[in-house]
Length: 137
Image 1 (cartoon, rainbow, N blue to C red):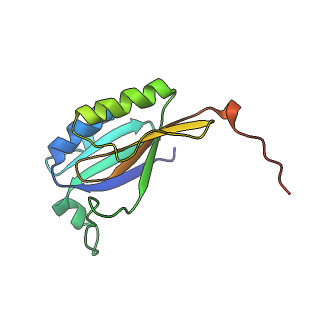
Image 2 (tube, one colour):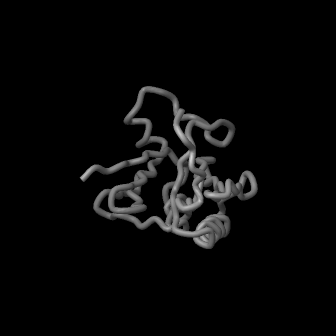
């Protein structure tokens, strides 16, 4: 089975673990310690939140300040608009921020939420039946 691991540098591992748990991730203690937590989104998608010290041991580049600039957008699919709202509200209650209002594209709705370190997540629902048919030229 193929898996995806997203690795993020965070200033406070425990605080970030609480935030991501509120979004719906669960902790995998097998790959967690005081410097890093393995957070599970699904069977094949994992988030590694690591202290700056541990994250820095994997790279020779400086760690970006994601509070003032963006390096990537991460997107999490959910099964309904209600689940978007529930997920983002839980994240806001856990200390996250919402940088802009909900976006509605007709076939897809999404809300953005930022964690304590400024990492930006899009929580979205896509209704495949509403995707406009487009003919290829």
